[in-house]
Image (cartoon, rainbow, N blue to C red; front, side):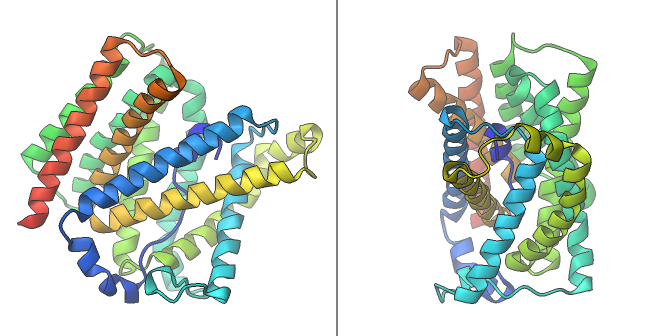
Length: 337
């Protein structure tokens, strides 16, 4: 996806029911929480930088998020079909089953698809109405909503030390954004609604995986098919097609389609890493890892590209990373008990 939309995960899957049992030792091994979280953070940052480079230095400017999402969904579906037919590897972890359809499975996946479509709709509105300086603080609200929704929907009550770590993380993002926040009613609305929807997305991914016995390839297939079906009329109603056909001149350029393909595959990779993390942990851990990722990403941008960062901004980022490390430490202790 373009720029920040690339940080947003597209629907993909998890371990199949057969492979889930085969990888149980991997998922419960010492240090697996840290390694899986690190994988998610690394893949997400790499995907974001790849997308940033593509859309910053590329001559192909394509600011049409709905069409881009639809293209990525189609590429994901094609990839799964081809992979299931070719089967280049025999390991159960990467053995994608042939496409199938079961109404009972579709009903279980449908709530996830609806929430995902809401994320797609609200994401560009959030980026449009919320200033870049407020992004990190608003994004950290995902943690608070994850705690709330985990209790209301999954009946998970967080330990006091976990809540304390989350407060430290959110305090750090608040310090980092201090002096840059500009209040407006519209901005406040999207600063609250978007993190809430993103938190719901993590909750429903977890619920759907649990309902289908962590069979993430089937979750991926059904979610992709239904999301593609919904996105087709949304693209038509958005008015993007008229603008695309009247302004885009590089339809026949190989570089443009290569750029779109790379963007689609990076989104797919981010989602795989996200689902591996959700399978092992919880939506709250995903939210913490995502906020930690944005802080690391900001620090890397400062070092590599020389972006200006005040002492207050730097202090906030460091507090966020300290809180994230504390959170990971508590979770690692809990996993050994």
